[in-house]
Length: 464
View: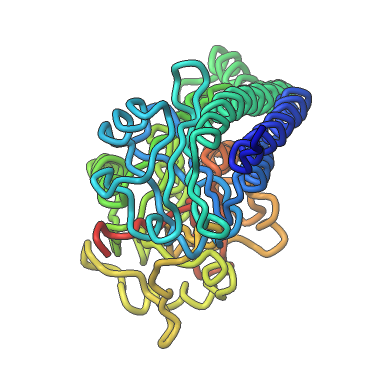
């Protein structure tokens, strides 16, 4: 009986891959709900590349409602080499993969960026049941070997296992974040009860005393009491407004993140907020430097409230001779921005803008210190939203505390009259809900710069 080497090789590879698949399934099934999505993705890529004898692989994650699949992990190729690429959630790609059982060679008609087709040849669906969870891209076959029927079968099955595991990990992460938000909300409620009860009792006591005294006081002297009464009522109004704003920030609500381009962010988030504040008398100087290839993931409602809170704070503490607030939006490097001494920019604003500035002016920087343009790697790219005033500034010893609930700067002219220290705390918490940072740079007597640093991504122009 003749021995067929091809058949023997086929049987051996089939047995090896079956054992590898069982090992993967057992490992991920055991650890999946305790792993972060990125760790599941890395483990999956390492197993797939080892068993299919490919050099390169990339894991793209699909998020419901998004228009594209975002890069999660890579093996055998640097993320920067992929040009910060994302894959459009294109119906053509979906239909083609479905027609080939979830695994197929990448077709140029799928609108996959060239930065990916340079490295990868095959695409495989990751699914949880019928729900798409992600996409694997594979390339760089060893010794020129192409994926055969067994490889396709293995990849289809592993795609289902990995997809289900990733979905479990996503649910686990969501539950973990929800629990942390609830713990933070409980802590904050306790702080509110401790502080607000005192804050409310003080003006209420003033109102009650003023009413009692007015009953037995001559009419000609009641004016003093009415002034004290009026001040206490305004204090109460501000307290109610601050607490309502805190509640509106959605302490318990998860961020509803969606990917938007910078021009969409300006038209749908920034300008509506600025328009409303202008109607209330705020003098706002805009200076945006949009890049059409930059996208960010935001919760529009939370970002609007956060930006509006920074505007309110800046306007409240502006100096009479400089009654304006500057608002800038531009994309740059996180490391560059955090490494700059933005305090040096603050005296330039009143010098250039004066007391009657134009409503349009680009961000002001010292000579030779303009921000570097992109693209930058995903872990270094940010969209900066700055709110700058030439106000009273914040003393150095207060700057680490101004984002804490119920803290007021020691030089606040309204300290003890209005303001309970909830506004900036709410703003920072909403920014962090979106994965952003909120940073302060201030010089007492010169002004303050509050910046929201939103993680950003440069999209490679189609065909570039």
